[in-house]
Length: 258
Image 1 (cartoon, rainbow, N blue to C red):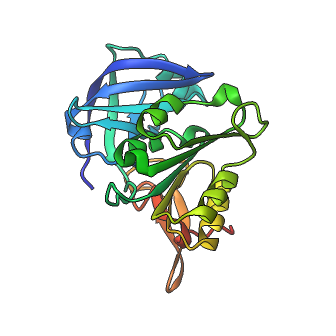
Image 2: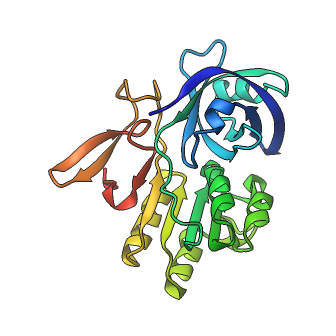
Image 3: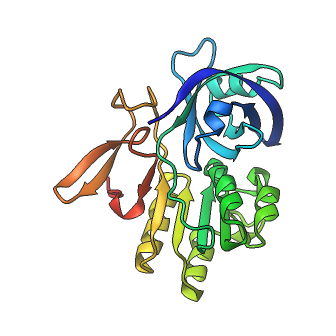
């Protein structure tokens, strides 16, 4: 795993939605080797543990990465208070990203809530060959749709209460798409119940699927035992580190039942 640690300048900030922020960070070392699906580990003054944040987008020409995160506690609240011109203590890129097929491959990108950001880089890579499905609780939480539409006309928004787009879950348009045509891969990032449901649908249609798992992390490099998940092997169940062996796994290898 090739990664670096350093203090990098923030060159852009946006407030995307209620308590959801975007930071653009300049780092040639990280941007030059990062791939979609990886994450960075951020240290904040006064907090003993770093915060893992998925990489939303990568601009290798501008030497920047973009992160999008929701304020969920004191750590991410302090992160949201950083502004353009501040520096950020960051380790990255960490973990194993998504498998990138030929750009001509037909794929479905699924993001749920704050699991939506990693799909921006994927949509940029596949362009019009990607169908993007985004799921949110309600319209106040909808983010990043303009970015998706710049890359592909095939975008779908689902909200649980029907306040925007399709009323229901991401599995509804997913199943409709898989019924109509063949896709080479489905990629998904979001809460575990959503990933489990996506994995069940893709298995029924015999479509390859990769999922980015969410777990609490300590070190971020596989040295501690905080972020384990159960993976099926020929010998039985094995425990893998989400930070080191993932966060991306083959959906069929994940033990979803406990």
